[in-house]
Image 1 (cartoon, helix red, strand yellow):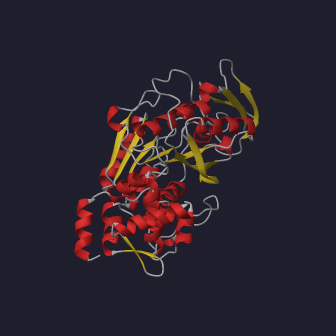
Image 2: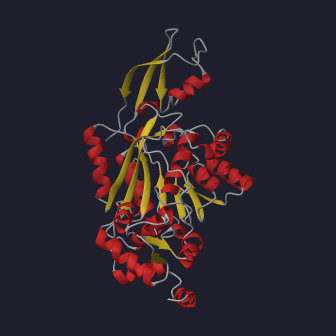
Image 3: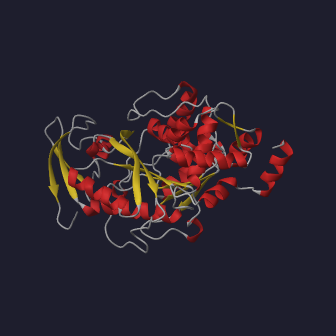
Length: 396
């Protein structure tokens, strides 16, 4: 086919990803076609077997998609699949893919590897910006992730093709992951929904000063998403309250926000729980027609969240065409940890003084106690947990 012929075909089909997915009636939807293009873009030249492995698709499906992309003039075979000039222009200018051979992948060992050198300056910038965050509000289950964690999340999303050229929604973001994503300058749109007006003010100011273009929306997720956010996003990222009900509410709103339910991605950070509670967590996820595609233990590290040893796991969830929110209207029950399981903790200082920490107390968290100091001796370190006291009125 001549170059002119390819141009005419491309003009007649401005959205080949959608067209091929529809024509082939792919169960994986448009994401399958996009992943094939992403792998060819990343590998530069790739055989069908390796292409299938990278795209996580069966070989027959991968081969069929490759053939359709060849017919459309986006791929050609030269000892393996390669992008044509028109294909290169399409994946970079239209799809916004940025992951080439020189892009360092995010670490897969729980996020403990050093940040690649090329992102050192960005990490230092993020550390400075993170200092602007308001104090965490324990009643909202806030616990600030480290700047390293926020950047690793963004790099992981970029690695998986879920940032470049995408419309991304962050449901809650006291970790400033949206800012880390914005600093990479590859997403098409970044939007943050949070109930904390203090936090949104910081994100607005940081976004404006750094040209990040982040949109913020102050909203209580116990209420359905604003109409303008429904079905408007490719990717969702959230670090919800660490309760089953909190997960159900936040994931339900995430499903409502997705443009497509065939293999769309939700990034979910969640704490490790005892076995039966984790079973409830996974039942809640699969009960909404969503499954765990990848789970990375110990990926997230926090300044707070001492109850969970300052770490949580990162799940990469995939939706199916049967995905449906568990919570559709206004949610009127409890969902934050302090509501679901109200407790206070008694800490002993080295000086011998015992201090009660928890909801309704002078010190809402042990982090607040350390910041303000022991009421008896003023020490900021050396507190040991003595006992937990469950308060009446809570439920699992």
